[in-house]
Length: 206
Image (cartoon, rainbow, N blue to C red):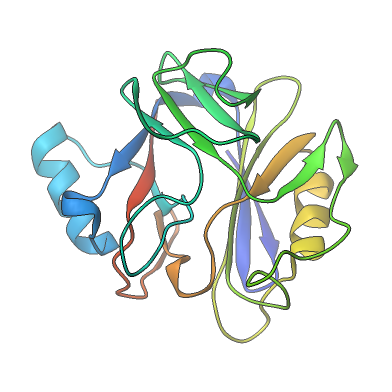
């Protein structure tokens, strides 16, 4: 595992051989703060994830998904666009609408990097400016990149996030939910906002 300091957060690079399993984990009743989710996962799954962080965009009032999510083969929402498929709940693969038919898949919005080229030309409404950020990416060797930036002082723009991912080595990747939703538990850092989110990505390392 390699960690790079980025703004007031971090970018992690995980090698394929370091990853034991990756899962999209739906929050209890679609609304769960990270500490409660972490404790529940430990109890229900029998072990704690090494990484747990927010992922999908969702409607904070209705809790309905606004970006693609597939969980254990169940489609919560599948919209036009790219994202990361977790093949065999282990191998991260950049795909279009989960066309590799992985059991778990999380869409990104917007795409930040594609084929090694930064794609951010404008910030979609509601995602402009500097804010807390969560993003995910992969490279051609199936390494996984996780970008986590705290909401508050020294936030990141989408373009800065894209630059950070490409400098770290990602060839494809995109934005997940951000602002006050950006929160995580990693092997060397914790950031909680107490905002309940709809779902998390959990990663267990070897």
